[in-house]
Image (tube, rainbow, N blue to C red; front, top):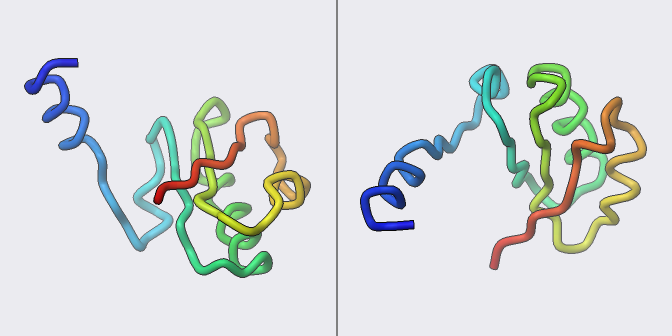
Length: 84
């Protein structure tokens, strides 16, 4: 990836506090407070807004990905993606 390509990728990343803005995206990285109930509620709501083939991820560092995936309709499209 050259510098121009990297700049294009970075420009395409849009942080948001509104779940409504996730419609039409390819990937969502959830990064709310480390509380299973809060994360579960946010993930479930966002999953209902994104395309069926979109990837939904969590930035959790302490909560089981399997437990978060258990309440989703498309757990096969869900994964952990932790950044330090």
